[in-house]
Image 1 (cartoon, one colour):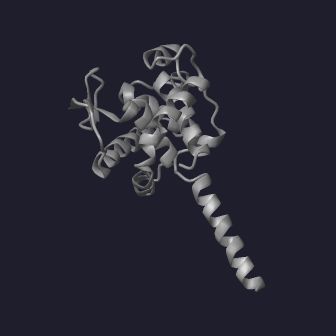
Image 2 (image 1 turned 45 degrees about the vertical axis):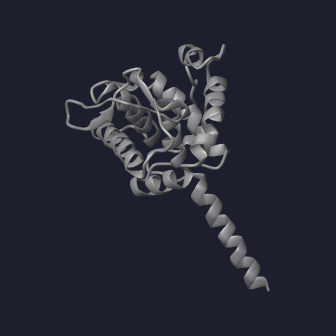
Length: 197
């Protein structure tokens, strides 16, 4: 009987650590972030900003994102990216499940979705779309790692998130790590992490 309890205890410990801090690009639980700018909050109908706004926007998107949680875990494992970060990027970039219509190529040949302001309501996101988005993010993070080899994994994650929207040359120093996209995504990701992602 004690062997059974030992195995159950080890299984519970393994399960909690797997969902707790996995990902090759920093630990989002330990990152501090100011959250969304007031402009982001206003665009989504909020009269406040910061972490509170990011968390509210994540909460609004949560029912939509829960459908994709298993897919986000699969893609996260494939690219070694915390699913909560993927959920944060999707929540920020595609609020309420609205995918951007127009996509284009950046100067380095990496395909990214561009914000044109035109949204097409969708009822699904494919694993291929999530993979593409996550691959672009990991390419940006790895570019930051190569350019700034002394930076911590957390700094590289921040830099990768800023470069994800600003392009590879956006991050020139550690002073560029506080872009609004990164601050908002990380606050949303921390919310999603606390809620099972």
